[in-house]
Amino acid sequence: MTGDTDTIGSATTALPAGGDQTVTPPGAAGGGAAAAPAPPPPLDYVRDIAISRALADLMKPIETAATDLFALEKQAARDAIVESYRAAFATDGALRVKMKQADKEFDRAAADMLVALDNWTPLIGDVTKPLGKLLKARAALATKMATFVGAKEKARTDAQQATKDWAARHADWSAPEAAIGKIVDGYLPQINTLSAAINTADTTDAPILSFWLEVAPRHLQISDGTLSANAKSALNKVTGALKTAGYDDLADWLDPAKSQANGAVHLIDPDALDQKRKDVFAGWKAAAETQAAAEYDFKLDPDDLATLKAAWDKLKGDVWIKDAKASLTPAS
Image 1 (spheres, rainbow, N blue to C red):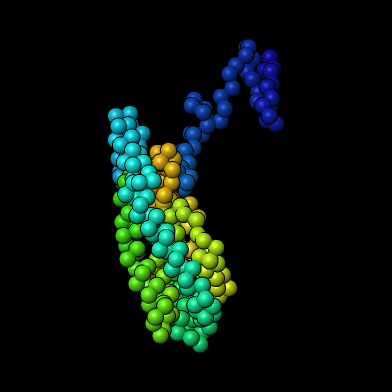
Image 2: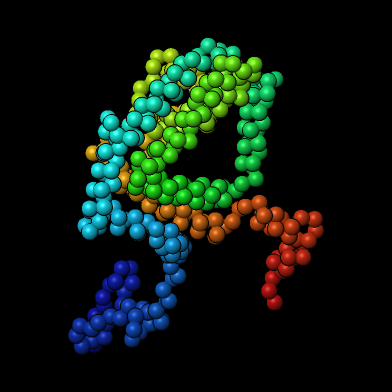
């Protein structure tokens, strides 16, 4: 008797007579070739695991911060931080009194040098003058240094610094009145000294530079005050001159929105403090995750100058020919 046939896809398999039979696919147990071994996991799996291991170390201090911010048993401590800041922030609070003085003195000094800036700001872009020459040399060196840093090396370095910065910001927001007070104490005594030098010294380039690139960035970052029209005009003259000369990075120092967006401590409503602390925590955690990935990518394929030089030492001149011939000779 002739057996029936069963079609699977385009293949026709003969079935023995005597009823329905189970067809064993090729390679399955009991028939055909042995099953092929499972392929190795994709490289992304290896990367993910390595990143997770690196992240575990970076997360240790973040884990402690998470407990402080979210654990139920830490609620009393969180409330105490907010209430301490609220007291300092109040109209007659120590921090508010200090900030009022800083706002007043900064505004007066900035407004007073409005005319002096007419002579000073053109120096920023004048490479024949000491200030313009210094700023140009600084920018040129930064550009040259960038050519010696690989993309992965830069990503790793930037990520390491970002994680460190966010950790510091978390600490600042855990005691904001102390952090802000320390910043004010660091620059407030300088304002009158610099103002006096600008008004009396024969050469004012250095004190004006110090005021706008040392004092002003710190004050503008933390203050919630409003500048007078003249002080605002002075600020605009400086930032405008910096941008016109191509020094946007320095102009950014005078833009508090940029530093505040990156978590820098500043005066805020006490009712917003608890959420601000959580936002900064999230920034710290995200920075650590970015760092872990950057560390792995650099370790896998380092592109720093020392590594590249070592690789080139094996390829320069004719030293590479021996290895090249070996790799091009078929194995016997």
